[in-house]
Image (tube, rainbow over all chains, first blue to last red; front, side):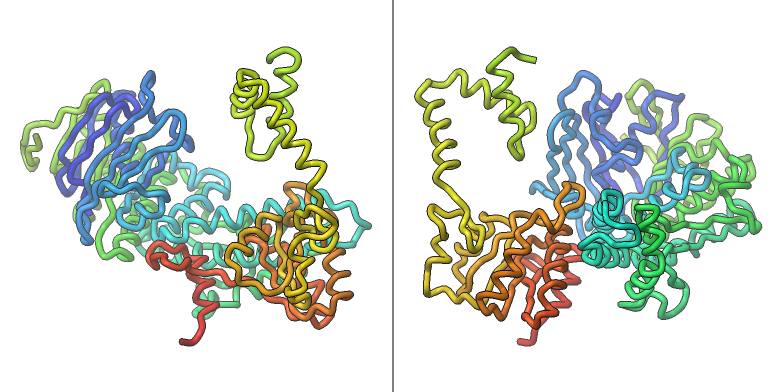
Length: 381
Length: 197
């Protein structure tokens, strides 16, 4: 799919930006703090209705404005999708798809898809396990928008059950009343999440490993280690009922410990996504550059997995992908950007503009100026 | 923030469910600015409701006397009980007019985060009624959310050993809905609860 044009008004530092966007690799170039990332963020917002950078929408509205506006059109195999969003500093946003209001993000995400990689993704390799679980959940939502409710549903069940255990004032060794009811909720929501995560990782693993190999000439191992004792790689490991049964079994084993520690000790909140290269975990041993290579490989892998699931590539956004890479790897990454549909890249350094770019935009103070066509570049007005 | 009576009113209003500090402030100033008769009517309505409306001793629904309208109705089958969370759920079910049995209002759902355990609900009253009235089927109509499901599970675990038929309202696709907009959980449950045609 392809974003054919985009318009940002009072969005971050963009007062009024309107751009036609060609297919292929599009590059926004400019010094730090001039609005390149904001431009990518705005374009991605049209596809996802959420910022990849911040949890709240308040910072998206240009300082001093009441609302920011993002509009644009996406060409997909299923037809054109016109998306118009009013991002409000206070109150709920207004979203229209093909001129009709939509209530849920999922209703748009089912039709268009974007994958965003940015500097925050360094934490996927280097941060806490929680950051890796979040990546997997983002992948689940990107692959199957209808499943984006699973993490929240599980978290709610978990919080209820944890509170029950924490506030329980019964005799030692005795279980709180209604614990079985919460066990059942935990198992139901948790098993659905475990299955979704396992399936998402299985789809991302091959393309992510391929990207990493192309980039670094090394192998990246990606494995999902669920807290519930199931083997996600076994052919029947995720059969209906199998995860639930394993979950219930492990809960029963840990019941005593849970009553002592007053907290839920089994479930997807303790999953791990293991990333390792040369048999060493990325978190403990990888350099800055290698962690970034792993992060970008995972995001490009996700983009490929979404393309495969959808039958057409999503729009891929790479915010400052080259800075952390050596010249050799930079060159290899450039080579990986072609042939994956529309890829919007930001770079701070003129020297990092890929020769294959279909368009180059200069970004200064929230104003975007498309460059006139040159070597290998198509003109955009 | 304010002084004396107006702050007291804001405080009282903001304790109501669904009313945040801002709404409370708006309501308080509306009341203060309103015609004194209007304020008096509101106060009177609150007092009357509190004094005259009681809860049915059988089912826990709102009632004007000892028993609610439904429990007084001899035409309602006492052997089928529909368990709901709140009196407003009774109203919703009655609007549909499809239940021939009676109700039992629990007064909420189990939610440890809100400090609500089974002992805070009318669960014991339910068990007593089931035993005394020769109830054969209990339809659990708690909300199809996390807390409602956990409550349903808890109630079912208590009743089933006594040989009572315990059923749960079906979850699935809304009538007139669109398949493509259904989320996975709903679709999964709709598939599980499918029936032959």
